Image (cartoon, rainbow, N blue to C red):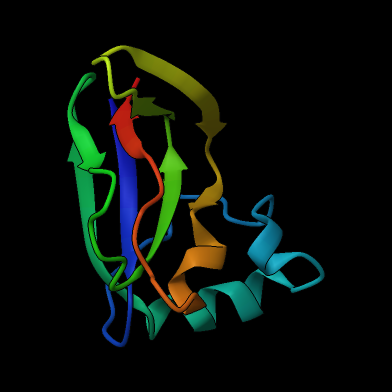
Length: 113
């Protein structure tokens, strides 16, 4: 099971997660992180193993922050074979560079592991 925050302007209580290890918050105090998150978290999703977080080609409308668990990223070849690309552990953003890309779409499938 994994827990995922979808970030944009909104708020929620997220005091149970230690986000200080996330590269996005490097150098910030816990108080600064809390202030950012109180104004930013729109949705907290908990997914079962095997569930898709995102599909290759889905538009990235938000910053996705994995706060608990593990995801597997994979691609499907033209022949239909699955190629594992990477495993991402909490606490880490998912495809952060693609949020601001000209084509802001997930480059891979993201699956709860």
